[in-house]
Amino acid sequence: LLKALRHGQIDILFGALRLPLPSGDIVQEPIFTEPLSLIVRAGHPILSSPRFDAESLSRLDWVLPREGTPARDGFKAFFQSHAVAAPQRIIECSSLIALRALLTESDRIGLLSVEQVRYEIDAGFLKILPAPMPNTQRPIGVTVRRHWQPTGVQTDFIALLRQACQG
Image (tube, rainbow, N blue to C red; front, side, top):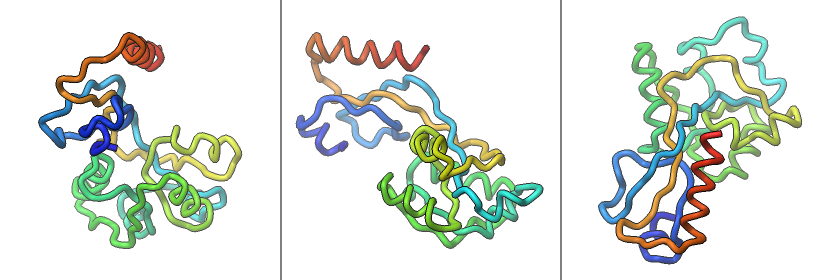
């Protein structure tokens, strides 16, 4: 999407912001910060565990975003801060469809926004693990080309995004 934005094929990206800025010809506007959660399938064996700590989490199989993303950096920092070796059994996945399937059909654990799997949580297919994963908040906002001039409709759209996200 960033390539399409930079080449004028799309005008606005709304989603997780990248830090550091991936290119000097774009600007990012943070609108809100979103925490990430540990997500597992309903019936996952860890849900019956009395407590979750870095050591027990390190023994699990994971589905994670690729290296260099804010979520992955926070994931690694969590285990480093507890002096525990980070898990090695990881599937890197950027497809939400594949991620949902991997989580609902296996005993893997994922680190993602609850809103990305809201339907599956509400339907009872996935559960939020009640274990904190500090330092995995990520900024969500708008990314545009540096000298882009929005139309009136685009200006109104971005204003509505800001309004909806603040309320």
